[in-house]
Image 1 (cartoon, rainbow, N blue to C red):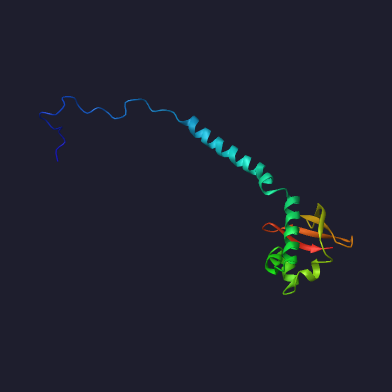
Image 2: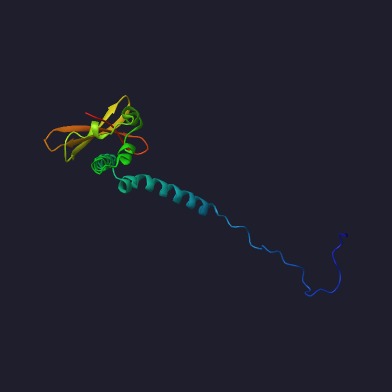
Length: 150
């Protein structure tokens, strides 16, 4: 292999031109814009999450509504899945309705928040057909889970 350039008649008399003749362009603004847009979208998603999923109070109310609706329909699988792990372990094979149904026509009348052993828990007040009330405790455990009744 020789290192001397080829000689002879060429199709074009000019030598090959360099492919990139312009000076390189600075793309720092584009990269910063993409990173800034990513951060803005991430922050917006976090701020809009309560709008999409609902506030913690709305989610707790919905969990209690689904729990009592499933008990009323006889759907024990769904009702059991709505319980937190410790409550499922406590109940074992028993029907959750034995502990949680204290009357007919449960109506959610309010919700709140309490702190127990450093954990923030939601409470949902349920009124029964005889005007008695009970308080359902909700723990965030892969979604709102029912963890007790008072």
